[in-house]
Length: 432
Image (spheres, rainbow, N blue to C red):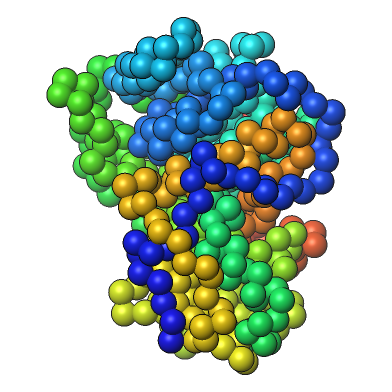
């Protein structure tokens, strides 16, 4: 068995990104090759801070606006951007807004980074497409399958570049593993384990008093009402500076998120479907853990192979294990182990002080796609298909029985009960 430690691992910095490969042409160039790309950011929480830090390091990119329903987060964004551009000797006017429509209405903004909670992604994404702006959207791409279908239509009808925030597609270790699987180095793949964690649970946090500068009604948006708890929108401090100590807990509750199934499944299931040639397809049968003798959430595909949401080591590492007739590979962030030395990637030093979100050239790929008008490495169709796979797992958990799915028509097979979860009812005033 060969392995690479966390420190001696693959790292490609944003500054050194080169040789990026692209997918088909989208449209004629919207942003001239030498012009500055101006971005607005929607949702200014913890994940947005990572993305902002990455985008502002890319030459020819300016972050000129931010929108959030929480006043203190708008102020943090404004302070940080002012300090950054002042330190760079640049005079960049950065505006903040409570409502993201104010960013969409600006003609001088080329692209929008959507880092809002998942329940907002569908509506925000479609509206951003209709506003004619390119999109970098955090995963999972949407909250429901129908939202994903409509988002794909909106992207293509409006000639938009949309990059899904599946940065593992730009990670050299994951790319190496996928290439080996696709080239047949492991022989016929017999099993795939992709460990991500469990489904969402019912919302049970106690109700708390709303902060005075948090627009809770706008935070809910299209979502049915739930009461406020600080863990959904973790507090921060400006004096002394203190960022979020935890991730927004909305993701763990079925009223607002998809649990680990979508949060980490959007990464790890994505790698599996990429490696196995299912980027434009998906599973045909999904069986929840606990049904009859199934110990793990199980996905069956039309050509006979099976993916289980199953740990592959004692540490319960979130990652993927490909098991073939001629060998196996385990790959995750900071972890690569293989049955044969020939399956190992080249060793490079990794700087552990650089966050994974900004140490992988995924953001560069989006910017280059905006200029070239070619699809990024994780375009809308791929993000949607991966998200659908995750959501199907949660639907199977909700019904506690298998569901049959037709990837070609994106529909359930003779299952009116499952069809009820294809979409959800929005609050009055919201629609796709």
